[in-house]
Length: 362
Image (cartoon, rainbow, N blue to C red; front, top):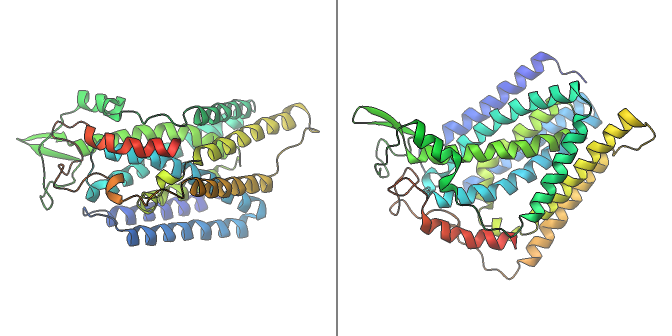
C-alpha cells in the first residue's frame, strides 16, 4: 500500500513534536524518579499502540499486524540495548541527573541513523531481491553472535573509537562543574575563550557509536516483518521514543532478564529464515511456503513471554537491586560532565557494573 506524501509529512511532524517534548522535559538536570519513568513509559507505549490501531483501521489488518510485530521486535531489541547503555553510563560515571540527557541524545541519533538505514534498505530490496537472502544470513549470524557472547564480560568503552576520534579532532575541557553551575550538563563550553566539548559529550558520542551498530541489526530484522517503509519507520520511531523513560523504569530489573539474549537470538533466527523463505517463494518456486505475518507475531509474543517468565524464575532468589548499584554515584562523587577528572571512564564504576552484567549473561 502506497502511503501519501502528506501522511508521511504529518507522521514525521508528530514524531518531531514528541522529540521536542522530550528535549523540553530533559532541559534541566534532575534525577528521574521511578514514578516519572513509569508515567512517561506508559504514555509512549499508549501512543505507540494508538498509532498501531490507526494503522490497522486505515491501512488494514495485515498492515496493523505488521506494525505491532515490528514494534515488538524493535522494542525487545531496544531493551537488550539498555544493558549496554547501563555499562556505558557506569563506566563513564555519568551522574544520575545527567543520565536522561545522554540517553535522549542517543535516542535522537538512533532515530536519524535508522531513518537513513531504512531508506538504504528499502532501495536495496527494491533493486535486488537477493538482498532478502543477505539480510536473512546476517540475522542468522547475529543470532549466533548473541548466543556465543552470552556470559562475556562487558567491554571497556574508554578506548572506544568514538572517544579516540573526539579527543583527536576537538578540544576536550575536563574542568569539574557542580550542580547549579551554569555550565552543568553542557555538551560543549568555552574555557579561556576556546570552544571545546565536555566529557559528557564524549559519553554521548560513545552511545551514538553503539547506536550505529544496533541499527545494523534492527533494520534487517524489521524488513523481515514487512517491506513497507512507512511501517518500518514508524515501528522503529515509536519503539525508540520511549527508550529514555524505559531505561529508568527497568534499570533495577535489567540484571534479572538473564534469558533475554536467548529469546532475541531465536526471534532473529526465525526472521532470518523467514526472509530466505520469502526469497525462495518469490524468485525460485511459488510452491515454497512463506511464513505468514500472524505467525511471526505469535512467535514474537510467545518467545518474549517465555524468556521473561524463565528469567524472573531463574533469578527469583536474587535480592532487589538498588538503584545506586546500576547508576553512577551521586553528584558529589564525580563531575557533572559524566567522567572522572581525566575524562576517562571510571574504573571504580566499571568494576561495580561488571558483576551485574555478568550475572545477566550467565
